[in-house]
Amino acid sequence: MKENGIYGLIAEFEEPDQVLAAARQARAAGYRRVEAYTPYLVEDLAEELGMHNTGVPLICLLCGITGGLGGYGMEYFAAAIHYPINVGGRPLHSWPAFIPITFELTVLFAALGTVIGMLILNGLPRPHHPVFETPFFEQRNQSHFYLCIEAKDPLFDRTITQEFLLKQKPAHVWEVLA
Image 1 (spheres, rainbow, N blue to C red):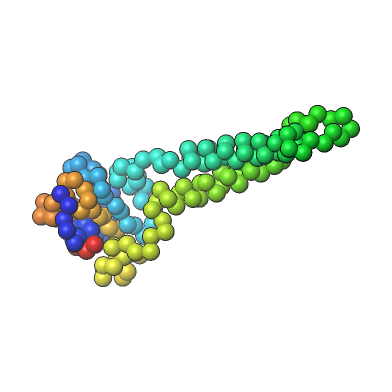
Image 2 (image 1 turned 45 degrees about the vertical axis):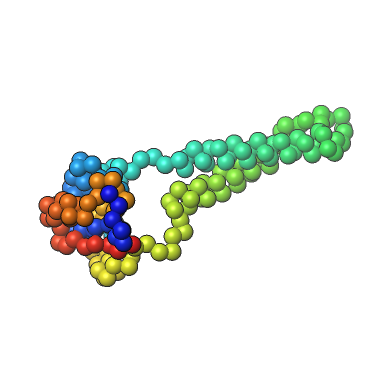
């Protein structure tokens, strides 16, 4: 159920094991729109939050193939079709000469596609995030761990979700306004 004017509920934990256990419990309870904010990497937290493989490797592969085929096709068109020059009896379609540009365009397209795909899939750039507007976050985000259940989650109900978070024994639970 979507709550108006609220982004979600966020719980503050003091230890990484607490936020990991809370994420595990949230996943087991059926919550799917869960985010964690930590000052450093917490092992296995991504798996507990239900993070899955993204499409970035596939985007990289497809962009690399596109760049390679595009580079090779461009050189073939220029050398064999549009402007054929017979130099020393060599064939017009001399593929060894096409390899450097084909490789360079493969790498270029794969790199650019990966960066652009990562930005799009991550929803970046995002100049504003509701969690960053909460008064506690700026002061404590270097030493505390946070678990936020978004109001977009199908199981979200303000009172039930707050009770669920309080059962996880956090230091505090706050509402995050949208």
